[in-house]
Length: 482
Image (cartoon, rainbow, N blue to C red; front, side, top):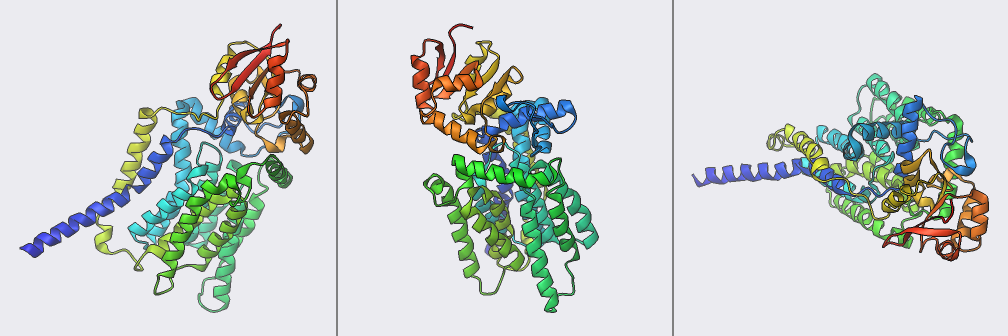
C-alpha cells in the first residue's frame, strides 16, 4: 500500500514539475509585456509605417529631416514599419506590445519546439529558453528587430528538424526574402546556413552520412541573394556600412564591444549563460553536441563580444546547444511526455496575451520626452523642431507633417560632417546663432545636461522663452514673438 502511495506521489510530483516547465513560455511573455517602451526609434518607424500604408508601398523620398527633404530614402525595414503601424492603428499600443512580444519570442519558441520534437527533454528545453531569454532581454523593446528574432528562430528550427530537401527549400526561400524586408539581417542566416552546409558536406565526404546537403547549400546561395531582395537592392551594403560607421562615431553602446563600461551590465547575463553552457558540456560522459549548432553559436558569440547588437542572434543560437547538452538521455521518456497536456503551454500563452495588455496599460520609459512634447503641441508651432537627436523619433510621431526635425536616430540619414556638427553644438563649439541660421527652428526640445551650452544660451536669450521644464531637465523653448 505504501509503495502505491509513493508511486502516486511520485507521479503527482512529476506532473507538477512538468506543469511548471510548460508555463515557461507564458512566463517569458508576461515579463516582456510588463516592460516599458523605451526605444526612441520606434516612434519614427511607426510614423513612416503609416505613410507607407497610405502610399501603398515603400517611400522613396525623405519626409522628416528638415535639411534632407525630398532626398532618396532607404527602405530599411519597410515591411516591419508598415505591419507595426497597422497593428497600432487597429488596437493601440496594447495590441502593438502583444504583437511585438509574440514576434520576438516566436523565434525562441520555434527553435525550442523543434528541439523538443527531436527528443530533447522538457527540463532541458525550459533551461535553454530561460538562459537564452535572460541573455537577450536587455535588448527587448518594440522595434523591427523582433521580426529578425522570428526569422532567425524559424530558420534554426528548420535546420534542427531537417525536413525533406524540397520542403526545406520551399519553406526557406520565402522566409529569407520576408525576413530581409522586415529587418535587414538575413546575413546572419547566411552564416548559419553556410556553417551547416560546410559541416554536413564534410560529414558526407568522410562517409559518415549518405545525405548530401543540397537543400542547405541552395538556401545559402538564396540567402545571399535575399540580402539584396529589397527596394534598396545592392545599395543596402552602403546603407549598412554608413549606419555602422555613424553608430560608432556617435558612441551607440549596442554597436560597441561587451567590455566597455556601458555594456558591463549587459555582459552579466551573457557570461552567466556561457558559463552554464560550458558546465553542461564539460560534465557529459559522452559527446552530446552538434558541430553545426556549436560553430554557429561560437561565431555569433565572437560577434556579440565585439558588437553587443548581435546578442539576440547569439541567444537564439544557444537554445539548441543548451537543450542538447542538458538532455540526460537521447529521447524523452513516455512518462515525461504524458506528464502535462500538450495544450497547456499554448493555453497559458493565450491567456497572458489576451489579459495582460489590458490589465497592465502601456508604460513609457522616463527617457522619452512625451510630457515635453505634449506641452509643445499646446504652443501650436509649425516648422522645424530642434531636438536632441534621440528625441527626433517621438517628435516625428507626435507632430509630422506640421513638424520636421533637425536630427533623429537614423544614423545613416545624416552624414559624418552633420554628426560632427551635432557634437559641436552639444559641446558648445557651435553657438545658438549658428543653429538658428542653419535650421530656422520653430521650437527647441532639449535636455539641459545633454545639451548644456545650448540650454544656457537659450535661457539668456531675449528672443526665446521657456514654456516647459521637466524634473529630468527636459526643456521646451519657443520664440517670444511669433
